[in-house]
Image (cartoon, rainbow, N blue to C red; front, side, top):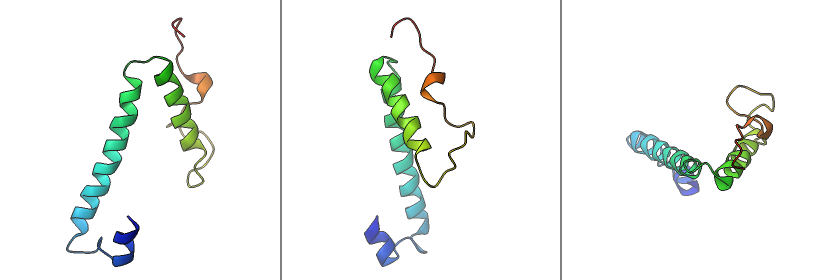
Length: 81
């Protein structure tokens, strides 16, 4: 990623390739995160807790709740845990 930024490879005429690549990277990360949640066991529960806490700790986003994240005490817990 740094090489692309330093060499300016994201500029036209390769701008669309750059946007498709970044979109694919984000989609792949989202799918991988969702894959942990599918079994909904302890691993899925704690992955959700860590993932939401990572987003909340990001300095680029405000710490106030914006409706996109939940805290660990708001996650649905069934008798399985």
